[in-house]
Image (cartoon, rainbow, N blue to C red; front, side, top):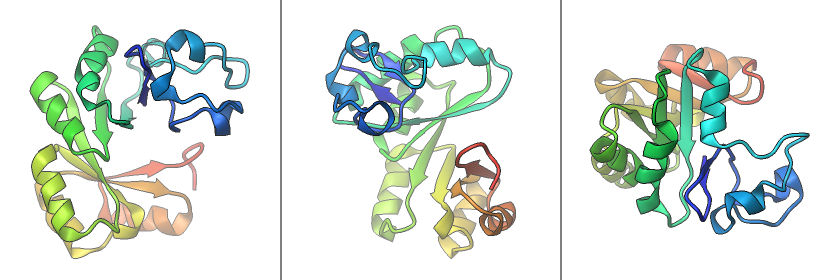
Length: 186
């Protein structure tokens, strides 16, 4: 998810719209109205509110926050977008400050930290301490490593991004859930 300049939460991975919409517009520097002219196929870029309405609580959601020097705007934006939603969901981010803000401002929301395998141990330890997550989402390359085994004794570990059958088998042994790419089938 990305935050527009006018504090709307969009369900969009990239910082700009070039790859998906052939536009150089940057999500964090554009308004919802400006971005509303872009299309993903036949549809506009979805807001979090429109996604939640579409899902209607029928399936669990795992939402990833992508930050662009907009950390302090996220808590109120998420509070607004999530108001009244009763379905199961969790929010995670590579930025350790996001789970911490969620803990403080949205204590009922399940929060996680996304961790790259190549992150040095000391940085990983600091990030986990700052985030105080309820789960970790670790790079599939980290599965089976001693630090992941230790963490898994304390909290659930999800693994991203599972793309093939070997990674699926590895995640089945070393993680509590797999985060798939594409349609969910390796």
